Image (cartoon, rainbow, N blue to C red; front, top):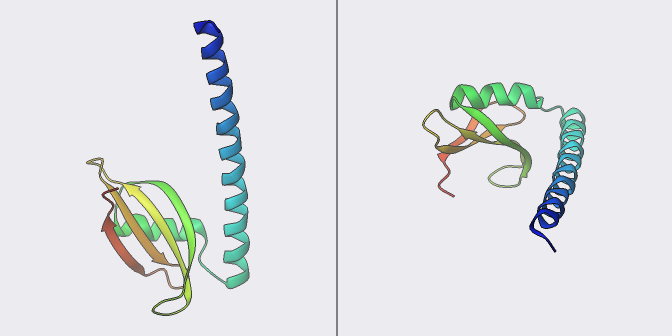
Amino acid sequence: MTKSKASIVTLSMLGVMAAMSAQADDDDAAEVQAISQAAGLLTVQEASEKALAAKPGTIVDTDLDQRRWPSAGWDYEFDIVDAQGQKWEVEIDAKTGEPRKVMRDYF
């Protein structure tokens, strides 16, 4: 295979992987919205405002996690990159909006 054909194949594979990732993100967002509405939780937008108030920066990832300990509930987990380029993990109680954890993410 020539170098240019190999480059085209590689780019094509990357494009397919990106499209699959975007589809998964859309599915995740729809699931998060459905759970938050059904459980009476804050919206992602409301929770992200709380997270950025706790740790200013840019949100690079968001998850909604079910918490079992110390008490049952839901937490939004945000990965935030600050102005110095350091990554932080911020957990927001999805019901109350209270920050549960603000911790530097070293990994």
